[in-house]
Length: 153
Image (tube, rainbow, N blue to C red; front, side, top):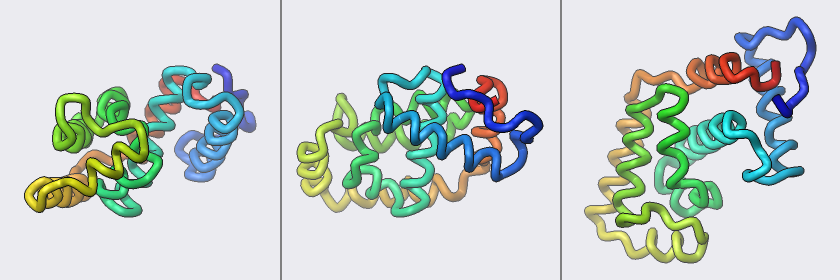
């Protein structure tokens, strides 16, 4: 555990605990970069980042924002926390961009996104609906992940 415990007695079920844990993880990310995080921290970081992006602007936002840099990594992160349905949606997003998935390089990704056909763009729009209709509760799954991996505990 590289993140030191928050405050003894804080409850992982308390939304404030999760907010504080996320803030501390972002600070750690800013200090050590993505590769400096533990595997467990990466999973938490990726799922939280992707979920926020989709909730903010849908799957198209993942494509044209810096978040897309991690696009191919989202699938395994969602699977790790047990959100296999949402993982498959990110897998579908990646497949729209070919065998290599969503390009990491922003300019390449932006150009590829701009070049999508209307049909491909509509397929991405459908992912939004499926994501929001999913019964997988990311907040609950992340809480379980943080507790089982002892992140911030």
